[in-house]
Length: 305
Ligand SMILES: [Ca+2]
Image (cartoon, rainbow, N blue to C red; front, side, top):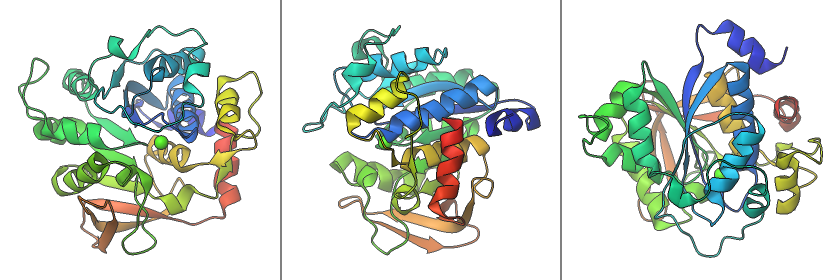
């Protein structure tokens, strides 16, 4: 029995998850989604929606194909305004060569609208993960009442979201600077907005936590996960920022994921994206520090991919 099956057995019901991913130039997003799909299949979580927060031609079809390969159908939303220049499409077209029910990005609703619909229809709460650019969560928080719900986005999140787990920031130094909060102006804007306005707790998994945790080397060559890693130039493994975030959320417990938490108030500069943290045991935010060597985390993730 693996860790997800054991987790499922200990839970009364699966934890509901909405998962945001940039699915952009790096391949650790693909490993993170594989962990979530495996946890879904084991019954530890219920993956209710995926929001893509960057757009390439094959974004939604490749996410759809990757889910389909695991036998899991998940509604996909896209932030269609998030078309970026300069990103090299390394694996998206390749993965869209596998069967995919979603034909194109335009088949998908706006991600924040999908999140509103899923949350409003939910009996109970869901957690939100994001391992990419955080603007979908900002758009959700800012969203007005609509056909899905009479609540504002902030009210809906307060009522229906348990916790938020973000791969974002660099927390081991003052004025930390990390890609998801600084790559584009909207990233810094969203990081700042979420820190100041989100009504539910947020745990940050920072750059420093995942960089030297190298995973994915042992996946068989016919697996689309391995093919994505190889296309990215990471056949011998890749840093595990996004998989560590997904795993911590799946376990619902930073200490079970091998971390110490520092609780307090996170701040993100709305212009530069630099992040800072004021410790406070009653604060709504937390970042994590590793308690084990990199190999400990890598071994766990590799077993679950
Ligand atoms: Ca990512």
